[in-house]
Image 1 (cartoon, rainbow, N blue to C red):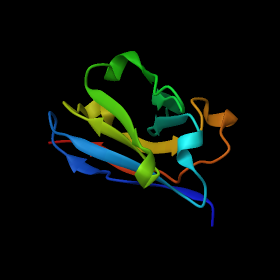
Image 2: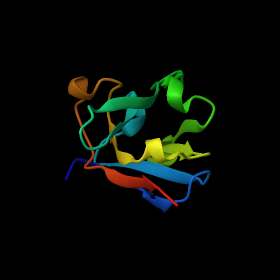
Image 3: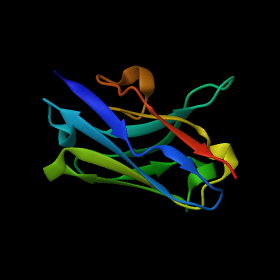
Image 4: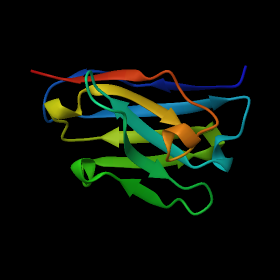
Length: 118
């Protein structure tokens, strides 16, 4: 079954860290731009970070610049999002997809909940 699966979410205190994983099954994730997106209740989905397929170029939205790092391990067919210095406003469902535009993606994951709270 072709799918993207996210993992690594959870509850963390402000200032803490989490590493999210986005793993592909039955297709080669390394052939795609991969984006991480988040959505919280009452807000629109937003792109958090993206990584290029061939050149590894990266994009970060301003609010996470310097705190989040996106990377990929093609041998593991996985893209990671390292999130440091987490803030309560980072609380959301985080999902990955095979593009930096959600609607332009070919594959989407189901999401993993990240909650930043004391």
